[in-house]
Amino acid sequence: MSVQTSPYQWTTVPTEFISADGISFAYREYGQQNGGTPIIFLNHLAAVLDNWDPRIMDGIAKTHHVVAFDNRGVGASTGKVAESIEQMADDAITFIKAKGFDKVDLFGFSMGGMISQEIALKKPSLVRKMVISGTGPAGAEGIAKVNKVADRDLIRGLLTRQAPKVFLFFTRTDNGKRAAKAFIKRINERTENLDKAIAISAYRAQLKALKKWGNKKPVDLSIIKHPTLVANGEYDRMVPTLNTHDLAKRLPNSQLIIYPDTGHGGIFQYHKDFVKQTLNFLAKQ
Image 1 (cartoon, rainbow, N blue to C red):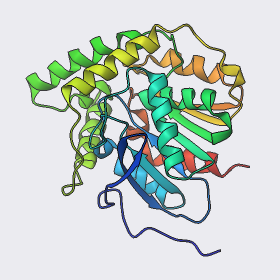
Image 2 (cartoon, one colour; image 1 turned 30 degrees about the vertical axis):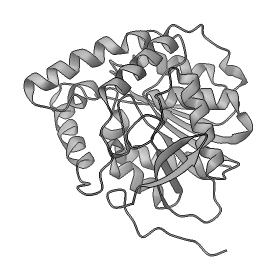
Image 3 (cartoon, rainbow, N blue to C red; image 1 turned 90 degrees about the vertical axis):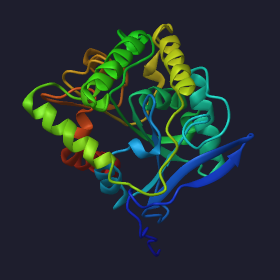
Image 4 (cartoon, helix red, strand yellow; image 1 turned 180 degrees about the vertical axis):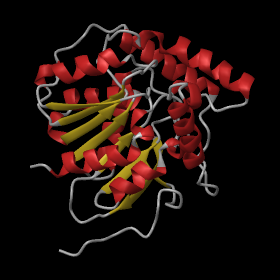
C-alpha cells in the first residue's frame, strides 16, 4: 500500500469545508493518509483551528492522519452554537460521519476531552482510542465554575496586554512564564488564511454548556472500555488536576501522565514528551 503524505504543515494546511445537517463545518486535514485510523481533534473553550499548537499537530501528523474542525457556530463553521456538551458530541459525530470515517481516534483538550467522553458513551463503536488532556468527568469539582476563572484571567490579559492563555494555561513560575511565551509565539506562526475568531456570543454559549455539564450528575465511566491516555499539568486551575486523577481511575483502560510545574496547558509546555507519549500510545496494539 502506498503512503499518501501531506505536503503541508499545520501553519500552511488549507481550511476546507464540508456540509452536513445544514451546517458548513470548517476543518483542516493533513498527515499520512494510508488507511490508518484518522485522529479527530476536539478543541477547548473559545478556541478555533488556529489555537492548536503546531508542534503537537505536526508531530502527530508525521505518522498519522490528522483532522481538526470547528464545531458549529465556532470560527468559520456555520450554525447556532450547541447549548450542551452532549450536543457538541452529536455535532462531532455528524462531522465524522460526513467525512466518511467509520472508526476514529479522538484527541480532546479541555472541553474537547469532555466532548470525547460523550462521543465514546454515545457511539462506542465509532472510537478506537482516546487521548484527552486538561479535562475531567461530568459533575467534577470546579468545572461549573470555569466561567469565573476564565473571565478573571481574560481581564488580567486585557490589563497586562497579554493573551489570557498565559494565565489560564501556565504557572507563574519562571518555567511557566517561559513556556507561555513560547506557546503564544507558536500559535501565532500561521499568518495567512486564518480562521475566524470566536464570537463573544459563542464563547458565552460555551460557558453555559460547561456550567451545565459541570452540574451534571456523574455518569458510570466504567462502560468506556477504549484505551485512553489521560494527561494534565499538576497545577491546573481551570479543570482542577484532582479531576484528572479521578477520571483516570474511573476509565478502566487508561494510563495517566501528570506534568510537573505546569497548569492546564501542560501538554503544550511539555509538547516534545507529550507527542512521543501519544505516538507510543497510539501505536500499541
